[in-house]
Length: 158
Image 1 (tube, rainbow, N blue to C red):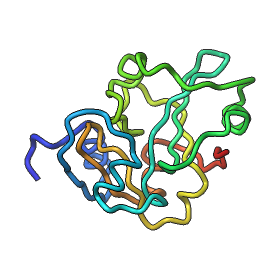
Image 2 (spheres, one colour; image 1 turned 120 degrees about the horizontal axis):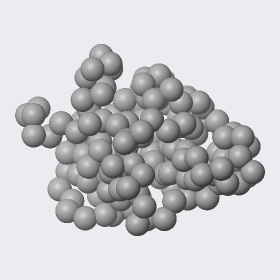
Image 3 (spheres, rainbow, N blue to C red; image 1 turned 135 degrees about the horizontal axis):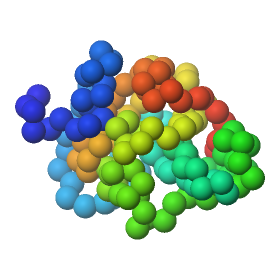
Image 4 (cartoon, helix red, strand yellow; image 1 turned 60 degrees about the vertical axis):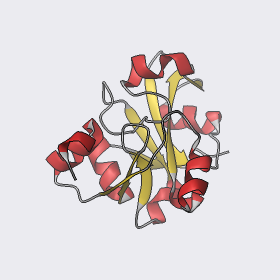
């Protein structure tokens, strides 16, 4: 693996001594996770997307959920101790996270936001998350992800 493919997310995992694998694929612009999983022949149940929400308080929260599922905003708000949570606007993704749409990883954002990994990940040996840029994926243990980003496993699905 050459240095040119290292992203902030990968450098953080290296620094923390976390075992992971990367998968690079050809993709020049945003395509949703379901399309990528279909293109690469990957199962949906281990493929996770990263969503960022903002609470009524103005605080940001990160949610890592299966690509084919949706958030239950009431569950998200309850987990975060907020009155309500909504997803940030697409135009704000880079400003808030430092990543672009389709390449947003829960690792290496501009700030370490409170992170929630859906409970479904806990039973998986490995999950697939964004590698921090379009065309890069990281395969790692959900427990390792939880430790590195100080996340909580919570049921946040609709």
